[in-house]
Image 1 (cartoon, one colour):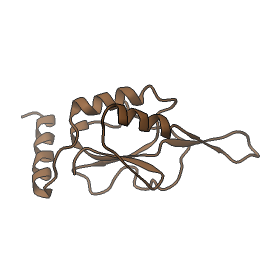
Image 2 (cartoon, helix red, strand yellow; image 1 turned 90 degrees about the vertical axis):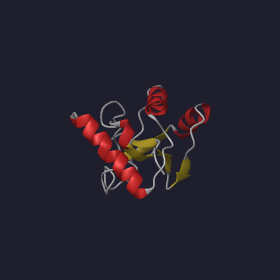
Image 3 (spheres, one colour; image 1 turned 90 degrees about the horizontal axis):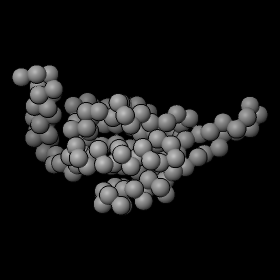
Image 4 (tube, helix red, strand yellow; image 1 turned 30 degrees about the horizontal axis):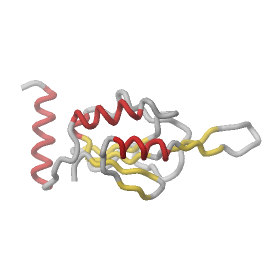
Amino acid sequence: MNDEDKHKHKVKEELTRRGLGSLMNDTKWRELLAEIDKLPFSPPYQRKDVLHPEPEPRVFDTDVWYHGDWTEAIHPLYSIEWVRIRPRHLKRVGQLLSPIIVSCEAELERVLQSLGQPYEKGDDSIWVYGYR
């Protein structure tokens, strides 16, 4: 059994132990990633892995200046318990001016709706669940 197979087995055991059911699969995640790639910017996100007690990044309660890495950091898809997306970021406009908020919330919601992807909104975020 290779390392990926061992990891998948651990994920399955944890899902069974916690009684979580699948809401997403790799195909649905890949469809979502392809559509996110078409947004005006890659929104920052917080990822909760099935096997880890804390999400990454740990604190995600305010707007941030960075974009999300939806290419490499989001993987492995099969172990995503949930993703909390902040569909906006802070953009600096000058040294003396406060940053402005740039949002792609409407575009992201249109993407989720067009894919038939259930989601929840709250805390200035959009939540997509892999398992529940």
